Structures are given as structure tokens and as C-alpha cells.
Amino acid sequence: MSEPWPLFAVGFGIWILFFWWLAKHDRKAARHRERERMLDDFLRSQTRGRR
Image 1 (cartoon, rainbow, N blue to C red):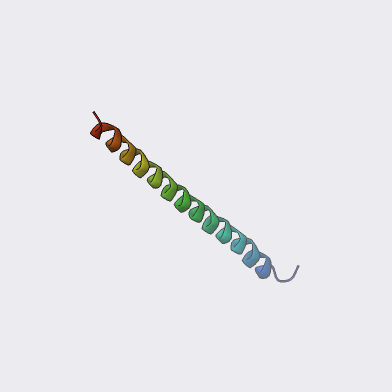
Image 2 (cartoon, rainbow, N blue to C red; image 1 turned 135 degrees about the vertical axis):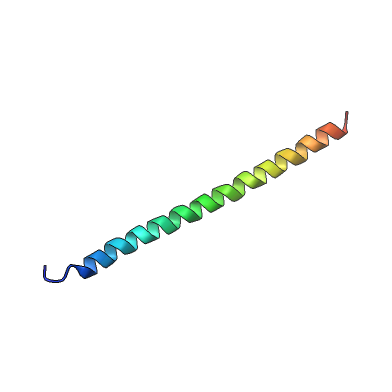
């Protein structure tokens, strides 16, 4: 192969897309954990108020 640069560009592009997808997935999981924590706090406050 006389010009390896297009393959390098494709390879790096795939890695960049993979890391972008991974970061997006981590942000989504963090939002979900935060919502779960807020719901737990709310339910805990509701059960404490009834004592």
C-alpha cells in the first residue's frame, strides 16, 4: 500500500467515535444514578415525616 494515511484516519476515527459513545453512555448512567438518589432521598423524607 503506497498511502497508509487514509487507513490511519479511518482507524483513529473509529477510536474517536468509540470514546465519544463511551462518554455519552457514562453521562447517561450518571444522570440515572442521580435521579435514583433523588428519589431515594424523597422517599426517605416521606417516611421520616410520618413518624
